[in-house]
Length: 389
Image: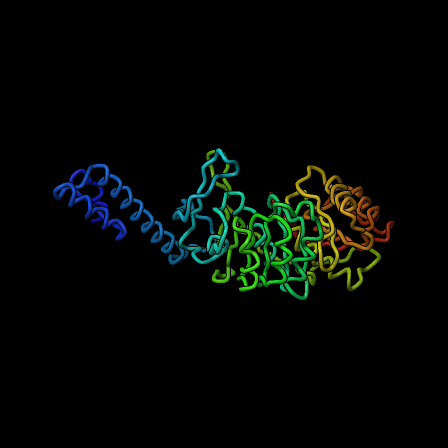
């Protein structure tokens, strides 16, 4: 009946949202009992959007209930997203943007965040906040992530969120300027004190203590996003657009599984190195490919992100760390994909690294392993790749 009414909008006013009643009643009073064609057409469009969303929900539910695998990709992909808000702008100020959320993912992920203070969020703010939230949730202990242009420039764990925040900001104080911060514990006053000393764009955490809100209130433009009410589950699908099409995949939710890793070198990693390798592997998963991470057991030491060659990613990570005054002696290295040549491992050792974790699988694995043995490195193969484009 809604569709029939909407089809006949030239003569019928159809209302599917109670929020439209006051405006329609006001128009009826002003126009002697009539509604303008413009209003009828607008309401008809809203009615068709409502029935389309309803039909989509039915189709998707039936697909799951009639034997179709919930993990299968359907021949016809039906999406239903409702606009949450208009954004300040897109990737650049001349681009318009908005945030939409799926009813199926309601209450899950960054779209469920409650903004406590600060100016409006932009497209890039959401991308950075999402990158930080996804990474910081990899850690079971109190952790803080500093994100710049979707890549981590500071990551650390600690006994408290105040300690992890202080450590994370110390990794790269230069890049931390204008960054986005994510914490996996409720932000307390001590952590807020560290953040108050620098300029950051936004902070996301599963809650803020009163002392933290009071300390950060003076930074009126600083966005604070509370995710305490959000579920930890991620939406079932990820989407990326290409010209004229949509790429769909399951999210990369595979965490570090060190019990499955295989040491393929003569030297075995020590206990501290093992902890550092797990830390590094959790981080490198969230760095743009080609990705290289130098780390210790409780903090990031250097990052090489988005490079066209893996050896250059190693060099950039090492050089950046040196510029910031960090010694890489005794660190470990994680690579998101295999080393295609021994040169990347040689550069890592030259910088001071003592252990490496990587997926393995290159046709030159033998040469890379031989180089690691020659250099006295411990090397572990995970058998898992974490490309991030």
